[in-house]
Amino acid sequence: MSYYAHPTASVDPGALVGDQTKVWHYSHVMEGARIGRDCILGQNVFVGRNVRIGKGVKVQNNVSVYEGVELEDYVQDMQAINHNYVLMGMDLKGDEEYAGMG
Image (cartoon, rainbow, N blue to C red):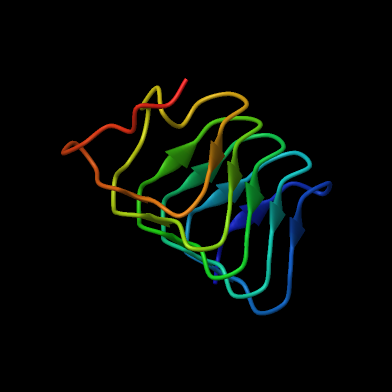
């Protein structure tokens, strides 16, 4: 696979990260997580075990995505996935629904 992980980022063995994805400063992707191609995980993002993130997803800085969350393709630039949010046990669909978080 050809993805970029900043030197301070941690991608655990057993995590799958798609081509052209960028994992930025101090982010952590745990074992069993699956991240699609062309994604951006901003600074200090946590991705838990068994999380599924589709292709083309942008997760902003300081977001935690815990086990059981599935983000479909192209979920990005949504206010629901912005600074200092925690996502647990929910599905978000690109351009179809927004989570009422805040």
